[in-house]
Length: 306
Image 1 (cartoon, one colour):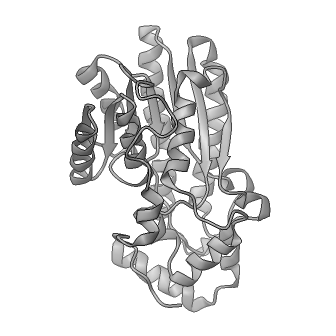
Image 2 (cartoon, one colour):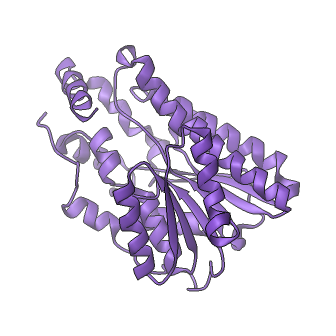
């Protein structure tokens, strides 16, 4: 299978997926007026798109990511959309950095209303070849990082006697499992359990926790690590019952609703937005048929990007 470079994804696949995030979508333009939302992984991909959607709806943004250049660009886009944004370079695997990111919201804007845990890590690999370092990196980012940010926000909300909403980005293989994605599956399963556990524990404190399990939605990061060739891309799209990949607006519309006051009676829920994929089986299962040469190519690609 020929290699394909998805490092920038400037072509039509990504461009079409990102259509519609620069605007209010189906919502009234003042839906998030006066509110502050923190987004980890906010410098790229779905985190960037949700930042822009919420900015058009009046929200002020606090963004965290390890890439300062990306954060600066998204903050400028938010300002052009007519809102305010601040950022903090953050590795959520570090509890102190995660806590400092949360405190940035109060420092800059004096409040925090919502948290979106979108920071993640993932890669395709035969599980017998996953190194302890690789497993640790994914699980610490996905599970530990989500807990650190969520706990820091919850502690402040409880201390201030203020409610809030947390939205965690998971995946359907959090409950089905997935071959070749064991670190991510383990981490996301933990996040889903945490979401439901804290939804009960913190409900009387006015804190809601929900999750979204999106299906294949083209982003430069995800496509580069998980869709390693045009043949795989075509096969995944054909596998989807709806016959198309998701759009960033599909994710943003759902996330906006779950974060908003319109969803005030919804907590502990995980909403799937995958075009019916999980009902017919995870797309990654087709990789069981790949020859050894495919996995050698994937291993070489990971080493080049390390």
